[in-house]
Amino acid sequence: MVKSHVLVISFPGQGHVIPIMELAQRLVEQGVKVTFVSTEVIHNTVTSTWINKDGYKDLMKIVSIPDGLDSWDDRSDLSKLLKSISQTMPGKLEELIESIDKEDDSKVTCIIADLTMPWAIRVAKKLGITSATFWLASVATLASILSVQKLLDDGIINDKGILLKDGMIRLSENMHPIKTSNIWWVCFDDLALIEATFQLVLEAKEVSSWPEWFLCNSTTELEAAALSEYPQLSPIGPLLASNRLADQVGHFWQEDPTCLEWLDQQETSSVIYIAFGSFTLFNQTQFEELAIGLELSNKPFLWVVRPGMTKETTTTFPNGYMERIGSRGRIVSWAPQQKVLSHPSVACFMSHCGWNSTLEGLTNGLPFLCWPYFGDQFQDKSYICDIWKTGLGFNKNEEGIITHGEIKSKIEELFNNEMFRAKALGIREKVASSITKGGSSYSNFSKFIEWILEKDSHANNQHNK
Image 1 (cartoon, helix red, strand yellow):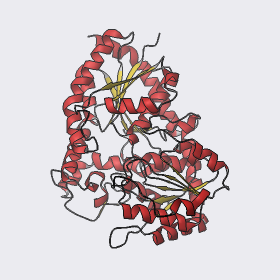
Image 2 (cartoon, one colour; image 1 turned 90 degrees about the vertical axis):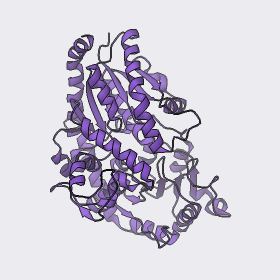
Image 3 (cartoon, helix red, strand yellow; image 1 turned 45 degrees about the horizontal axis):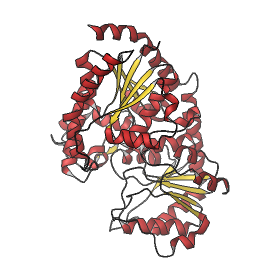
Image 4 (cartoon, one colour; image 1 turned 180 degrees about the vertical axis):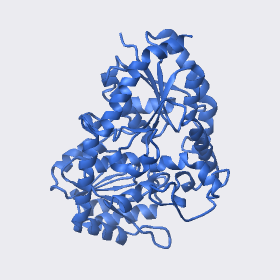
């Protein structure tokens, strides 16, 4: 009978659910029972798109608790969502754990919480359950949370998290300088969202030292300087389904696998893959400039245009666009990204530089064209362009638009300079070494599994008191 029973809880965002769902599946592969917890809306979305969800039915349950908002509320209003989550979900999580312990044959022995759900760590402490926290973005981004007191003391931000000083700073001697305007929570346009996010940052910093393990989706091969500052971190990344030859799960939209057949028909290292994640929004002018830039590149391209990607009600392509690009361009609403990026036809990745996408591109040795939108994406772009030197960024004009000429120019520069590809392939080799047997991430994950299994008996005893 399975004794270890881990409850895993994720923030309700696409970029959070995918890596934490991957972590959950790896636990299951090691014989650990997992209850994956999300909000009701995310639960319904993920289970509707996960075709093979019965594959783990014996050891993995996917359950939901309410986020406190009504069905008609706008969950893209993140400040409203954050407040509702913190008010509603802690009590609901306690109720869930109590019901599991009464009805299940194995009680919850450990809680793994997304650090952006810090209240879940408080629940674990209150109930006497061992815990681990998981940080799914870069360690450089995490550093701004762990250094929040320094940012306050130095007058970089005020007590509401709002930026006071624009310039370059070092969070530590070993880490590369960052723009203060790139601190991830100050990038939002909405002051209410900055304040709500900053409150989460303060709570995350407070509880960050409580769990027995602090896991992160990175590797020493990518972030040696940042990781050297935080010996309490255990990097176990990149957590990608493709690394274990499995299908990625946790998508909010149905993937279109037919684009893989289209890629099969293209020449090796010829295709530009364009995808901007689940949040990026364009106005119609910017969208059309991108479309024309891709057209003028004369390169084959696969472009993910998800529903609601533009601020306008409907996404409109330039007149006659589809006829002009013909079969040279393929446009889909959502793609099986890990499979796309590993396809030999793909030459480069035009990306918003979310950490998941960054890891997926790096793992496949691809150079980047960087188009960050918000949050941690600007720091990820800095890694790609300034530290690893595996990609290029775009420059905006006076109106804040990246023009079709700029897009065409940067595509040509990336394709004509072999240095980007060579450096990307070098990074790929380093990352691959970390996740194979004997590598740093492999070893850390193995130790974590051992800890879960060893702590099981103790946790059960504590929980029964």
